Image (cartoon, rainbow, N blue to C red):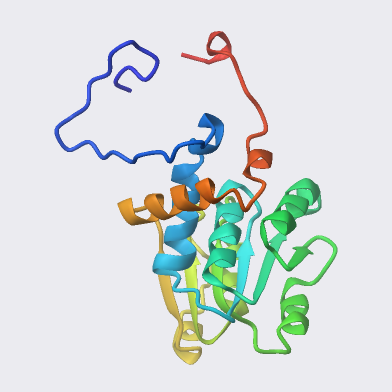
Length: 214
Protein backbone atom coordinates (compact mmCIF):
# COMPACT_ATOMS: atom_id res chain seq x y z
CA UNK A 1 0.00 0.00 0.00
CA UNK A 2 2.84 2.40 0.81
CA UNK A 3 5.64 1.01 -1.34
CA UNK A 4 6.36 -2.45 0.06
CA UNK A 5 8.61 -3.32 -2.91
CA UNK A 6 10.16 0.15 -3.24
CA UNK A 7 13.57 1.35 -2.12
CA UNK A 8 11.88 3.67 0.36
CA UNK A 9 8.65 3.21 2.24
CA UNK A 10 6.35 5.70 3.92
CA UNK A 11 5.35 4.81 7.48
CA UNK A 12 2.64 6.77 9.31
CA UNK A 13 3.38 8.10 12.82
CA UNK A 14 1.31 5.32 14.46
CA UNK A 15 2.91 2.45 12.52
CA UNK A 16 3.41 -0.75 14.55
CA UNK A 17 6.77 -2.53 14.42
CA UNK A 18 7.71 -6.08 15.35
CA UNK A 19 11.33 -7.18 15.48
CA UNK A 20 11.79 -10.49 13.69
CA UNK A 21 14.15 -12.74 15.69
CA UNK A 22 17.49 -13.51 14.09
CA UNK A 23 17.57 -16.66 12.01
CA UNK A 24 13.88 -16.67 11.08
CA UNK A 25 13.50 -17.16 7.29
CA UNK A 26 11.54 -14.42 5.54
CA UNK A 27 8.85 -16.83 4.31
CA UNK A 28 8.15 -17.96 7.87
CA UNK A 29 8.32 -14.38 9.18
CA UNK A 30 5.45 -13.64 6.79
CA UNK A 31 3.34 -16.05 8.83
CA UNK A 32 3.52 -13.82 11.92
CA UNK A 33 0.16 -12.15 11.28
CA UNK A 34 -1.94 -15.25 10.48
CA UNK A 35 -0.29 -17.13 13.35
CA UNK A 36 -0.98 -14.07 15.49
CA UNK A 37 -4.65 -14.54 14.65
CA UNK A 38 -4.43 -18.11 15.92
CA UNK A 39 -2.81 -16.98 19.17
CA UNK A 40 -5.43 -14.26 19.59
CA UNK A 41 -8.41 -16.51 18.90
CA UNK A 42 -7.36 -19.69 20.71
CA UNK A 43 -5.28 -18.36 23.59
CA UNK A 44 -5.85 -14.69 24.38
CA UNK A 45 -9.57 -14.56 23.58
CA UNK A 46 -10.50 -18.25 23.57
CA UNK A 47 -8.73 -18.78 26.88
CA UNK A 48 -7.61 -22.34 26.17
CA UNK A 49 -5.91 -23.84 29.21
CA UNK A 50 -3.80 -26.89 30.02
CA UNK A 51 -5.80 -30.10 29.76
CA UNK A 52 -8.76 -28.67 27.83
CA UNK A 53 -10.36 -29.97 24.64
CA UNK A 54 -10.51 -27.76 21.57
CA UNK A 55 -12.40 -28.24 18.30
CA UNK A 56 -11.33 -26.18 15.29
CA UNK A 57 -13.69 -26.07 12.32
CA UNK A 58 -11.80 -25.48 9.08
CA UNK A 59 -8.16 -26.57 8.47
CA UNK A 60 -7.15 -23.53 6.42
CA UNK A 61 -4.38 -21.13 7.37
CA UNK A 62 -6.34 -19.64 10.28
CA UNK A 63 -7.47 -23.03 11.54
CA UNK A 64 -3.93 -24.40 11.43
CA UNK A 65 -2.74 -21.32 13.32
CA UNK A 66 -5.31 -22.08 16.02
CA UNK A 67 -4.03 -25.67 16.20
CA UNK A 68 -0.53 -24.36 16.85
CA UNK A 69 -1.70 -21.90 19.51
CA UNK A 70 -3.84 -24.52 21.27
CA UNK A 71 -0.90 -26.91 21.34
CA UNK A 72 1.38 -24.23 22.79
CA UNK A 73 -1.23 -23.43 25.44
CA UNK A 74 -1.32 -27.04 26.60
CA UNK A 75 -4.64 -28.32 25.24
CA UNK A 76 -4.95 -32.05 25.90
CA UNK A 77 -7.26 -32.79 22.98
CA UNK A 78 -7.16 -30.83 19.73
CA UNK A 79 -9.69 -31.80 17.07
CA UNK A 80 -9.88 -30.39 13.55
CA UNK A 81 -12.85 -30.82 11.23
CA UNK A 82 -13.02 -30.29 7.49
CA UNK A 83 -13.94 -31.82 4.15
CA UNK A 84 -12.59 -34.80 2.22
CA UNK A 85 -10.58 -32.50 -0.03
CA UNK A 86 -8.71 -31.24 3.06
CA UNK A 87 -6.69 -34.47 3.37
CA UNK A 88 -3.31 -32.71 2.99
CA UNK A 89 -4.34 -30.01 5.44
CA UNK A 90 -5.40 -32.70 7.90
CA UNK A 91 -1.91 -34.19 7.62
CA UNK A 92 -0.34 -30.81 8.37
CA UNK A 93 -2.76 -30.26 11.26
CA UNK A 94 -1.48 -33.46 12.85
CA UNK A 95 2.12 -32.34 12.32
CA UNK A 96 1.33 -29.07 14.10
CA UNK A 97 -0.24 -30.77 17.10
CA UNK A 98 -3.79 -31.92 16.33
CA UNK A 99 -4.76 -35.19 18.02
CA UNK A 100 -7.82 -35.95 15.88
CA UNK A 101 -9.00 -34.93 12.40
CA UNK A 102 -12.63 -35.34 11.38
CA UNK A 103 -13.83 -35.54 7.77
CA UNK A 104 -17.42 -34.34 8.10
CA UNK A 105 -18.28 -35.84 4.70
CA UNK A 106 -17.35 -39.29 6.01
CA UNK A 107 -18.13 -38.97 9.73
CA UNK A 108 -20.91 -37.50 11.81
CA UNK A 109 -19.27 -34.48 13.46
CA UNK A 110 -21.45 -34.35 16.58
CA UNK A 111 -21.21 -38.09 17.26
CA UNK A 112 -17.47 -38.20 16.62
CA UNK A 113 -16.70 -35.32 18.99
CA UNK A 114 -18.95 -36.92 21.62
CA UNK A 115 -17.04 -40.20 21.24
CA UNK A 116 -13.63 -38.50 21.49
CA UNK A 117 -14.56 -36.45 24.55
CA UNK A 118 -16.55 -39.11 26.35
CA UNK A 119 -19.75 -37.14 25.85
CA UNK A 120 -18.38 -33.96 27.45
CA UNK A 121 -17.96 -32.12 24.10
CA UNK A 122 -15.36 -29.36 23.59
CA UNK A 123 -14.32 -26.75 26.12
CA UNK A 124 -13.56 -24.39 23.25
CA UNK A 125 -14.89 -24.43 19.68
CA UNK A 126 -13.26 -22.16 17.09
CA UNK A 127 -15.09 -21.70 13.79
CA UNK A 128 -12.57 -20.81 11.09
CA UNK A 129 -14.65 -22.11 8.19
CA UNK A 130 -15.83 -19.80 5.45
CA UNK A 131 -18.99 -20.18 3.42
CA UNK A 132 -22.26 -21.31 4.95
CA UNK A 133 -23.62 -20.59 8.40
CA UNK A 134 -23.96 -24.29 9.28
CA UNK A 135 -20.64 -24.23 11.14
CA UNK A 136 -21.89 -21.49 13.46
CA UNK A 137 -24.83 -23.67 14.48
CA UNK A 138 -22.63 -26.74 14.84
CA UNK A 139 -20.07 -24.78 16.90
CA UNK A 140 -22.74 -23.96 19.45
CA UNK A 141 -23.94 -27.57 19.55
CA UNK A 142 -20.38 -28.90 19.89
CA UNK A 143 -19.43 -26.73 22.87
CA UNK A 144 -19.90 -28.22 26.31
CA UNK A 145 -22.03 -26.57 28.98
CA UNK A 146 -20.28 -23.40 30.17
CA UNK A 147 -18.01 -23.71 27.15
CA UNK A 148 -16.66 -21.01 24.82
CA UNK A 149 -17.22 -20.41 21.12
CA UNK A 150 -15.00 -18.25 18.93
CA UNK A 151 -16.39 -17.18 15.54
CA UNK A 152 -13.63 -16.21 13.12
CA UNK A 153 -14.91 -17.31 9.70
CA UNK A 154 -17.06 -14.60 8.12
CA UNK A 155 -20.23 -15.90 6.43
CA UNK A 156 -21.87 -12.68 5.19
CA UNK A 157 -25.19 -14.47 5.57
CA UNK A 158 -27.93 -14.60 8.17
CA UNK A 159 -28.56 -17.79 10.13
CA UNK A 160 -32.09 -19.01 9.37
CA UNK A 161 -34.26 -20.12 12.30
CA UNK A 162 -31.44 -19.69 14.81
CA UNK A 163 -32.27 -21.12 18.24
CA UNK A 164 -30.80 -18.45 20.50
CA UNK A 165 -32.14 -20.17 23.64
CA UNK A 166 -29.44 -22.80 23.16
CA UNK A 167 -26.87 -20.20 24.20
CA UNK A 168 -28.79 -19.69 27.42
CA UNK A 169 -29.39 -23.36 28.17
CA UNK A 170 -25.71 -24.18 27.68
CA UNK A 171 -24.45 -21.02 29.44
CA UNK A 172 -22.07 -20.34 26.56
CA UNK A 173 -19.64 -17.52 25.98
CA UNK A 174 -19.56 -16.55 22.28
CA UNK A 175 -17.08 -14.07 20.79
CA UNK A 176 -16.62 -12.77 17.28
CA UNK A 177 -13.00 -12.28 16.18
CA UNK A 178 -11.57 -9.90 13.60
CA UNK A 179 -7.81 -10.27 13.78
CA UNK A 180 -4.80 -10.00 16.06
CA UNK A 181 -3.25 -7.75 18.67
CA UNK A 182 0.32 -6.59 19.19
CA UNK A 183 0.75 -9.17 21.96
CA UNK A 184 -0.48 -12.06 19.84
CA UNK A 185 1.92 -11.25 16.99
CA UNK A 186 4.82 -11.02 19.43
CA UNK A 187 3.91 -14.46 20.80
CA UNK A 188 3.58 -15.80 17.26
CA UNK A 189 7.09 -14.61 16.43
CA UNK A 190 8.40 -16.44 19.48
CA UNK A 191 6.70 -19.63 18.34
CA UNK A 192 8.16 -19.26 14.84
CA UNK A 193 11.65 -18.60 16.21
CA UNK A 194 11.48 -21.68 18.45
CA UNK A 195 11.75 -23.98 15.45
CA UNK A 196 9.56 -26.58 17.16
CA UNK A 197 7.06 -26.84 14.31
CA UNK A 198 7.34 -27.60 10.57
CA UNK A 199 6.11 -24.16 9.56
CA UNK A 200 7.94 -24.39 6.25
CA UNK A 201 5.11 -26.68 5.18
CA UNK A 202 2.67 -23.78 5.51
CA UNK A 203 4.64 -21.85 2.86
CA UNK A 204 3.47 -23.72 -0.20
CA UNK A 205 4.39 -21.39 -3.10
CA UNK A 206 6.98 -18.75 -3.96
CA UNK A 207 6.27 -16.34 -6.83
CA UNK A 208 8.50 -13.84 -8.58
CA UNK A 209 7.42 -10.20 -8.39
CA UNK A 210 6.84 -10.25 -12.14
CA UNK A 211 4.07 -12.80 -11.65
CA UNK A 212 2.21 -10.69 -9.08
CA UNK A 213 -0.99 -8.99 -10.15
CA UNK A 214 -0.77 -5.24 -9.67
